[in-house]
Amino acid sequence: IAEVFPSLNGVVDLKLRPLDDSITNDCSVLFLALPHMAALDKLPVYLQSDCKVIDLSADYRLKDPEAYSDWYSVTHTHPELLEKAVYGLPELHRQSIKAARFIANPGCYPTSVILALAPLLKTDWVDLKSIISDSKSGVSGAGRKPSLTTHYTEVNEGISPYGLAGHRHTPEMEQELSSLAGKSVQVTFSPHLIPMTRGMLSTVYINLNESLSDEKLVEHYRNFYQAEPFVRVLNPGKFASSHHVLSSNFCDIGLKVDSRNQRLIITSALDNLIKGASGQAIQNMNIMLGLDEKMGLMAPAIFP
Image 1: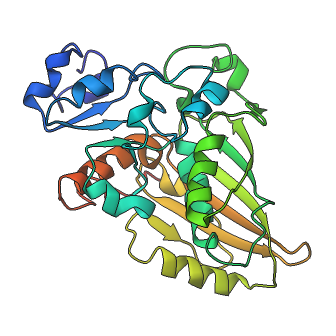
Image 2: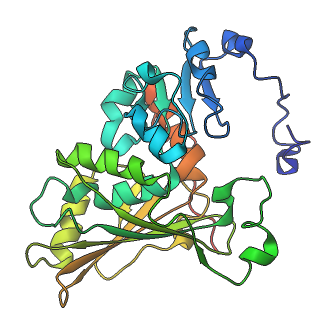
């Protein structure tokens, strides 16, 4: 594996092997990290074994098969499995994850936005029709395959919006937020590509129905996430920064009331490759296997 990832030289000596149907014969958990739509027909084969499966692609995240036609321009070939897939956000679905055969690991943007909003959705404090998320991600979110938009000269010293009013992570956010709220929730989602390798910051805006203080909101968020080892609600006046979660499985959340405009501003930072992908997958595996949920994941951010 060090031939593919030289940074693992002298650390890991695993040998790569083909991803064929026999791969589940000698493993307890299979992580699928294939391009989107590449796991559609593979996952049902792997589920015929006793192996648990954690799929990091979007192939089984959405419950409505029509959403794949609308947002991914594909016909889902196994819609019967969509309801069986557990959406792997431990902070919301831990009990279901414990009993799951296979997990649809959440996307990076949805993780940051859902965690930012979840504590509010069962209150009457906010206008759920007013949600806007302005999110920024490092270039690694686009994967390793070269493209014009991720070319050095295109990314360096610039910031670019993309997928406005049509990004594929939108229905994922709306699905989970609607489920938690018990009614339809829609989101205006504006992602941006910024010139850094990894990291993500979502700044989420939502209108308030009543006057609230920063202190009251921080207390409410801390009560909501009090048992969650990887969500850190910051003190009043402090805001999330990608620096403070770099290469960690933490999601930092900061809150600020804009009293002049009766609006709440929520900052949510995570590492798009860890809490936004592989770290969350490990967290899900730990839960599925009855292990310490924090095992292998308590490394602090790399700073400076």
